Length: 124
Length: 425
Image 1 (cartoon, rainbow over the protein chains, first blue to last red):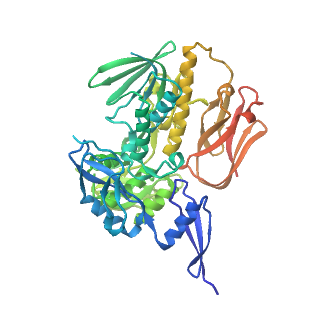
Image 2: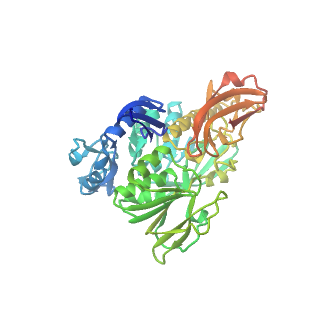
Image 3: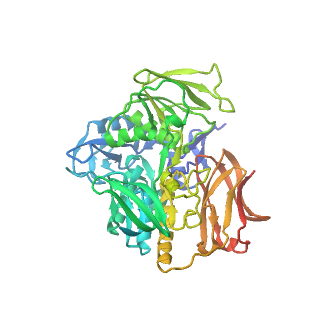
């Protein structure tokens, strides 16, 4: 007899927050319901196989009009790397000026993903 | 100084309104901003999730703001920073804006039209009646957000959060990632006030407990917060004796709701909604004072900035139309507007009135519901006539709803008709 299991998720891909249900038959995804758009199915599939998150944080700025600049991972990184990523960013310092999109840390925690600035900080 | 249009506030609402007004042909306009840069609260909202509707991509707050700041710059829209509007008055049809800045002192602007875009404030401890001592370490979630994200300082190490509004949820994750221990989020209501996705990605991801139907009944600490006592509440929201748990912590964050900031609107005599705390507006986002428009969180508190931008752009276009009509002395019409009301679970509607002569082919109506519903229908009626029915799987107080009314459906209604929004189970 097949082992059928249902798992519930709240999709985080947009603020709609759809309640999505995945049906697993013997550990394999056989049905996904409740999602409004394809992103919901993609989210649940990833959540069951390789959960990932975008991390947003700050890095220190030297010589800038502001002491810190906001940053984000350019795409989502494995969920388990969130704390190591935050720690790596605490030790990162950049020099002003910083523009939106500037890479502040390459290949964070060996994920292959860069961390980029999300705000502009002028030099003073 | 005279201006055709003055926009009070340079956050997302003010920027989108200014851009739209300028594109509609108003060149003589000015944004007045209290902070030392444009962008408003978006500057401290460094998390992602903004702009999916507007730009079809997921931006952080500063990136979303930058799109509008750049557009305003390309359109050469003038603005004054570090400038605080302290009074609003009227002289005939003109609006008198009194503002002050360090460079210019106090100055006045005579404006044909004003757009209110001052945003909102957080409900502070003083408005919450929390018992206990008064040590340092109690912040609104937004204040903590500013400390962490703008000043680069941590307000505390061990945190309890009261209220499950979105800013509190976002700050639970933010402070956890920065090395703080968030012990729990207590919510007085039996449901969260925040978006579902924020509970998933800000609390569940980090195993932070969400205690529904719980509140703070005591705060201890002489100089600094030492502990917070949380108790369960009954169905009347009263603490249940014997359910108290004391949490050792050095910080209490408050995320207990936002209030539109309408002190200035009050000075002008703009009537406010008793539900939202924001001005009552018609289909053009015009308050009951002709030529004074309102948009964004000063009008009603939004969950999504995308809808703020959309609403503010409409207000900007309508303000431009007003300025043009006043300049050409087009007489104001005195038709009795359609009145929109919410009942049976629908708490309010924005707009509150519709003048058919000014309505575009369709009009988005935004509203909030008073509690959680499953498999409910939102019904819109005028007298015996059902104008619209929309099935909804889930309705929640924390999530703003919207419906679109078509002008063609309203044209046959008698002037002054009431249009009722309600939840039919």
